Length: 343
Image 1 (cartoon, rainbow, N blue to C red):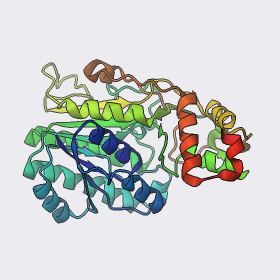
Image 2: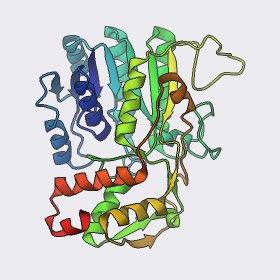
Image 3: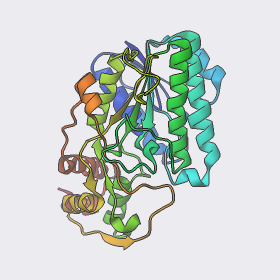
Image 4: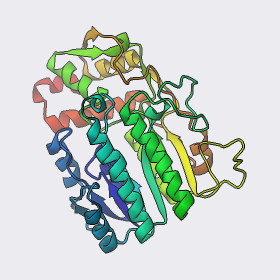
């Protein structure tokens, strides 16, 4: 297939593009190189893809509809994996406009391209953040998610609503994936595994919000990518048993689906830090702080629907995933002075 991957220089986008190329697909990657975090890291991810003759890259900003539409007409992708977004819960408190531009306007333009030019299947990134104040664990896609606690979460919930509207009105098959705390090699520098590793190596204190009493459904990136590709291959369809009197939020009488994609095994943050300390061979210096605005205490993914429909089965143990991340971090940043601690 020819598959358009938005956010191809991003963490999940680059891994997804690599896996698609490995199985023989043609990949059209786009990214706008948003400077939210280190552009050198984004360029390095992209460089690892560009040696493949089946990969083509275009620097496109999704907020520019004409540019996206022109590319779409030339590239003629069969399916779209939309992973580009403005990420980050805390940053959404500081710069809300960035989330409206990238996550609402950008997504609208992707939907319009799918409508105008035709696409077999649109798979897009949602987030576990949509569960917000919801505390019924594990989080299920069959629960209502109407109580967002950050603008980032609100934009992702909006994406799901927008996708359903286009699936209903224009019969565009759309599948949303609610990602749960993805980590691994080439990860994002604004996320806890990356921040903690950098600070522990540097001998700096790590900040533990909610006094460290969080738990997260940490999910290794290879498990995530396998799920993304399995879902892309299974075009969303109508649920013939959908009942408008008792509507199921995860399905519809339109070609629409929403899935959780996580590890289904939450890890207390303090346990994650202990694994990281053991892998690095360095004890962390810790500062305990109150809960941050927009944050949630726990995440826990019910992935039964994804297992049933596409055979998704996360398999990477937290110890193995952390070890792989640390090896990559050491290689990428070349911390030769601490190599004896990382072997």
